[in-house]
Image (cartoon, rainbow, N blue to C red; front, side, top):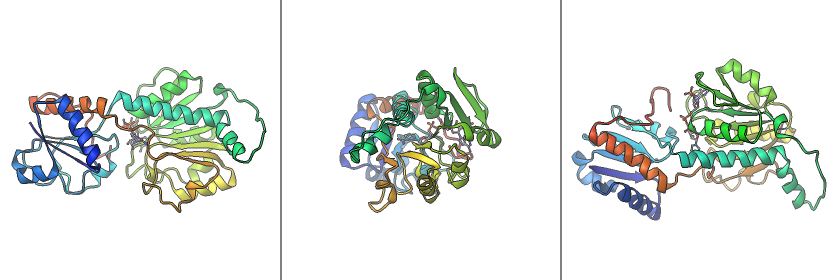
Length: 313
Ligand code: NDP
C-alpha cells in the first residue's frame, strides 16, 4: 500500500511519525507530498495532520483519508478535499485519558481555589478560603463523544455531579446525567459551577460560548475550553471575567495559535493559558489506530471513526 503522509509538522515531527507508522505497518510505502505528486495514480491512502489545502487533490486511487488529529474542522474547511473518499479521525484511548487528566486538574483547581491561591502567591498574600466539597460543585461537559465521555467519567469518579450535553440523546455513563438539545442546555447552565467545552467546531457550535451563554452560568463559574478557540467569543469572555460573572477561565485553544503576544488572555489574572496541550496525539498509540484503518481499507474491512461530513464531525 502506498500511503501519503503529510501535515503541518516540522521535519523532526514528520520523521517521528514516519518512523512510528512504518514500524506499525512495515509492508506499506510511506510517501512525502513531493513523492506522491510524482506518482499521483499510485497513492492509495493518506495519513494527514492538517495538510496544506489542496494536498489531497488529484489522487484517483485514494481509498482512505486518515487524520492523525481528533478534530477535523480544518480538513473539512478545505474545499478541495476529495468528496467521495472516506475520512476517518483519530480516536485513541490514550488521548482520551490525557484529556480526562487535563479536565480533572482544571476542575479540581477551580473547586478548591488553587488558581486563586496561585494569584495570591504572586501578591504575597496569605488568605484561606472556605473548602468546598466535590459533591456540591456541579460540572457541565459540552460534548459527549470520545473526549467528553472520558472527562465525565473521570469527574464522576472524583465525586462531582456531572451533566453531559450532546446533540442527540445517547446512552449515559454511570453517574452522568446525559442531556441533549438546546432547551436542556439552558436548563443546565444555571447550576454549572464549571463548564467544560469538548464540542467539535461546526457551523452550529462556532461562537456558542458567547455573552448570553456565559450570563446563564452562576456568578463566578469556571470556564474550561479544551476544544477549539472559535467556540468562544473572546471579547464576551473577557467582559464576563472582568465583571466577575466568570471567576476563572482555563483555555487550551484559541482563535489564532500560537496565541498572539498582545492578546489580553496572556496577562489576565483570571485566565490560565495552555499551548494546545490538553490531549496531544501520542504517535506510539495513534500509529496503531491509523494502521488498523489503513489495513481495513486495503483488505476491504470496515473502517472506524468515520467523519460524517454533512454534520461537520
Ligand atoms: P466526538 O465526535 O467523539 O464527539 C463530539 C460530541 O459533540 C458528540 O457528543 C456530539 O453529539 C456533540 N455535538 C456535536 N455537535 C453538537 C451540537 N451542535 N450540539 C450539541 N452537541 C454537539 O469528538 P471528540 O470527543 O473525539 O472530540 C471533541 C473535540 O475535542 C474535537 O473536535 C476537537 O476539536 C477537540 N480536541 C481538542 C484537543 C486538545 O488538545 N485541546 C485534542 C483532541 C480533540 P452526538 O453524540 O449527538 O453526536
